[in-house]
View 1: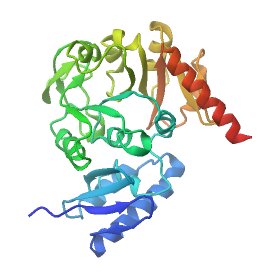
View 2: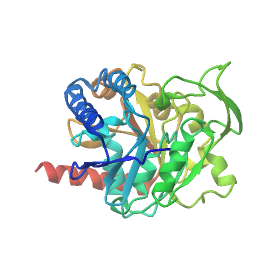
View 3: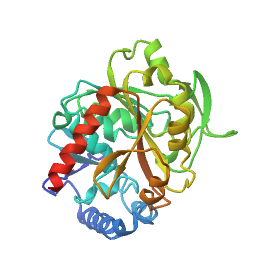
View 4: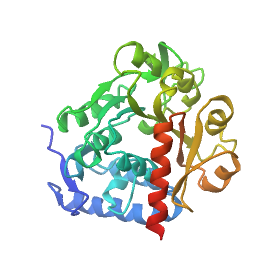
Length: 319
């Protein structure tokens, strides 16, 4: 018999449906996040995954806000940081998503994993936006589909990878948050691949719409951009992950040097989304080698104006 999920409310801190050991584990997971946050959570995932082996197999349902529930296996090393109520996942994305609550846009969530951002962006506090959550992994997709279900099936799910064009690829990896089709894979799972522009061809989205396109595709970001030229010509923003260990800033360099997109990066020192003309700014911002940093690319005057307005709000907050 499958046990019902443990319930955790991030707003109140209430934990319900957990036995004594599961409560103790929750305290350990939260405390571990608080301590390791001083070191960019170095070692947290490994320690949490060890602890997970002592826990019964069941889900935890985390209430992210009054209209968003996010489920994952209890003790999961990547997502258990959410038990730390002071932890914010990908601040720079939340900054843009919150500020865009009043914009009629669709989130295209590539490499959606279990659907965290699709759950949030489709919730009322974030504007109840349409979202298409795209995830190729046969291991991850059922968890993504479950999160769509527990949130009233309010966002669409697609089981495929994103690349330069239609085809198939081998997906492999040892961590659910880092499965990839990059490189010449010999083993792994066969997955279908589509290009971003195929979403236009297939009538999933319209050319005249507004889009925020999250590309968390583990080494295939450039191929994905090559397959989304038409989409990027419209009112879209690419939200791409730059790996902290990549000192050549490959994704940002491609955006800056090989596309017509403006490159924008969140600078924690100014609390602003800065337009980048020199990649040296990333040497200062990317302080940790084992985490990802999000950079934005857009050719849209609409979204550039929104980002300028967001920066103006940041200046007023500081004053």
